[in-house]
Length: 151
Image 1 (cartoon, rainbow, N blue to C red):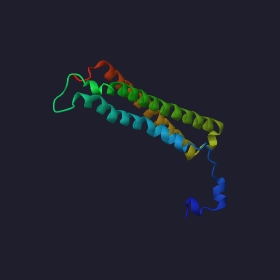
Image 2: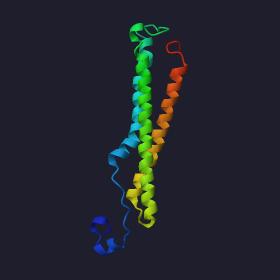
Image 3: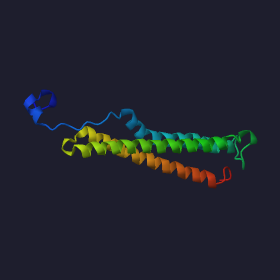
Image 4: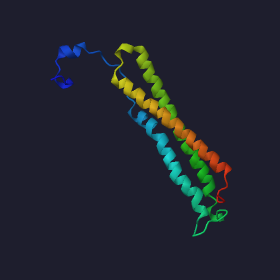
């Protein structure tokens, strides 16, 4: 058999060593998941905070009730926090990506799947973090320019 478990030591000695990457488990998971999760939280809670005060009963109001005026500052704070989480996910992923490139540059012939996998996860963490940061900024712009209950 040629599976790695059954290979003899001579065959294993001929394989190049793989580049060692720093353990990035939780950082990589944060980088990939935090941006989309923050956007999803902003989408669900933000929609509720933006529209629920306009529909307290069966009919739409033109302005939220005075008792629900607190929802607007909470909505803006939620959007800002979610945008910052997505930006942090982008920054963490970018850091991991740069670290993996440094490992590849130090020993290009020794680069193996672990470093390539780390770089792949970091790349998609940058895409997700940056993309969901921009999506949240567009939502902030929409809430800031459109009438709250008149739409």
